[in-house]
Length: 347
Image 1 (tube, rainbow, N blue to C red):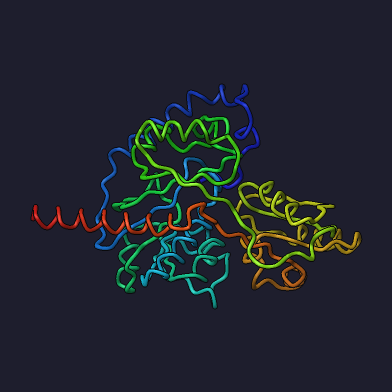
Image 2 (image 1 turned 180 degrees about the horizontal axis):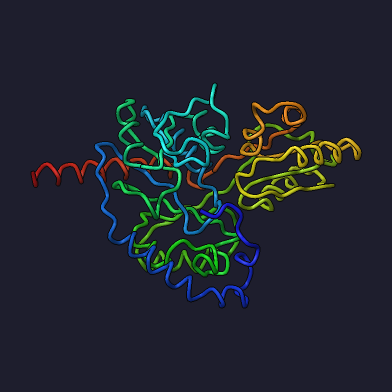
């Protein structure tokens, strides 16, 4: 999957999107067909999928973490299933945040593993089976909405209300992974993140299809009052760096310098040097995301220095209705129970 989305994906459709539209049409037909005709293996425990309509982040990982915390509050043992990024992706393995580095298992799995048991696997069915053997009683998939080959009991599709679905075109002419209407058929509910209006059209489509939606926002975790009025260098290698910059500015910090990198990108030595040199020369505090920070952990030399100097701005997904995560979990459990009863009665 594309890690750095072209900027034109997130603006009004231009000649590039239209020029690529024949390829997008073919890609969309194939992706939609695969979603409709995928053979999905049943797992004996509930599966919640946290996905999105587009390439790039919309807040899936903070959402998955919030659901895991809600599950633990209910006395459940949740486990995360992730495909991971780069590294040893040809095996199914449990992520150990005390020993694994982001280069081997991916940045998001490391963050997830700090909250609950996490397994990475290209073959999600095998990953789910491994989680079941580990004693997990609820699986939370981080992504995989369009491509999973296991039965999903509840599919929560996250959509950012500032970026929406970008120019609305399908890959490679835009960020959409498959035709929206086709994706909506497989969604259980939508999660609107933020207070923008870019998702309104999709929400209306979902409402007409009888799909409920929840509202949430990203809330800063921890105390950062001392950043008010401070000049900072903000860097981020996430799908939407501007979202991070807005978060930093909401704390009252003054972004005197910023550096944006590709999603999941590991910094080169030159990039690390440049960040440190600029921050030192201009007397700036360095701020970054939790995803960027875990990619620095285990580094040496100036990478280790950068990790020590970073102020990490962590965010949580705050549902407008605090009971919404519990409701999602309960519906997933009920759906799993129903499909198992049907399977047993038909056996």
